[in-house]
Image 1 (cartoon, helix red, strand yellow):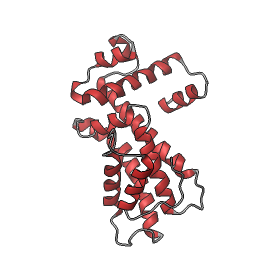
Image 2: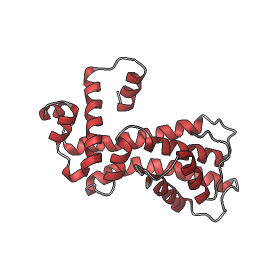
Image 3: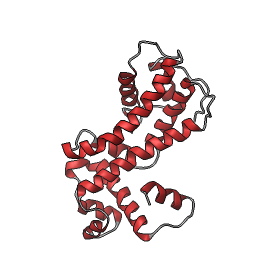
Length: 211
């Protein structure tokens, strides 16, 4: 059972194994500590304390600090992508690429603002990871970036963005602009922020739901 499956089951009032619930508790604790301390300063004892466990108990679920961090990164990124996909898919097949991008922007910003530690932990860790951890994380990161690039490419092909636009570059600029507002008290309402980001990439709001 994946971490996402466990969380969905718990949220729905369903049952999961004690081991799966403990594993999720460890991951939540690790995300919080990593968010606050970063990669180098995080110790397994810190994570165990936040999780309410003995440090040795972590070894039953994760063989090393690196394995635990790998799972925090994977879960943080895949959960974020799943949220964006759900928002876009709810629009149905007739939605224009521009409306899909608008929905994706809202979903990404909502995910950053949600009350969990995974998004800020991932963003803080990306530039701190050792080479081997970074290499293992790259396929997950590429899947997320690729989804956004496909949305922008569809808008370009539909004539909603300039035909000579470099969508790979625009994808990184778009994600960078959204992620830069994480935790900023002066970012303003998300509706206004999303409008500014859409304007930045040459789009205007076209009817996707807003907060």
